[in-house]
Image (cartoon, rainbow over all chains, first blue to last red; front, side):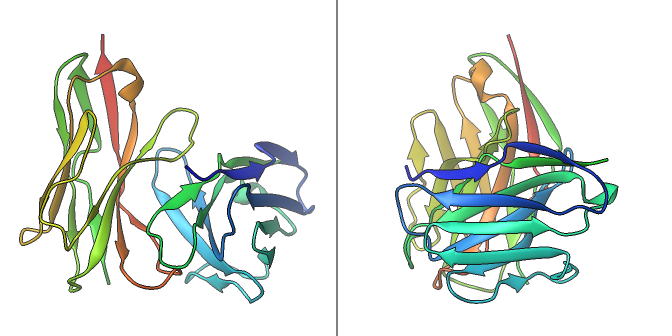
Length: 116
Length: 116
């Protein structure tokens, strides 16, 4: 299957700083990428849908100024957590869909963010 | 809005035995896709099996099969000959057909333990 690489796998940052997470489709072009947040022992919560070359669509309740998403190319989307606080500590996962009509989404390995 | 319900937070099965995980969903759409994803301790999301709603035949992938009951809006996963490596969190997911930006809607997950 297609490979989605997420980097870093884990990161620790200080409160008030910003951290960037990258999501790359390695062997395919991803028109659409999705960003999720997952709390321990809970399901994946969709944060936003990212389309190449346009603004991301955020889910209700997700602060767009807090979680900046950029999808500058067909193989790269980034999530930047700005002015991070301990409550932003979580597991963040991206996924990418192959092509326009393909039904399957492939997931990155996730990033564990800890804000201290 | 569509919803996905997994009523079994935890399940346990003996190695080599068979286990069935339940999933129900609610939708007014007639064309859609259903998925089962596995999330092992590594937290990498892995697609186990998918079903197109317009297909009457139940999908199978080796030891994994589904029982898709469209009228009842039920989509259960059967794991045969359970192996220790099957231990993971399993998520049922729904996606509308059509556009690439249609998002996956996840259930709350079922944690499967496999006893040796």
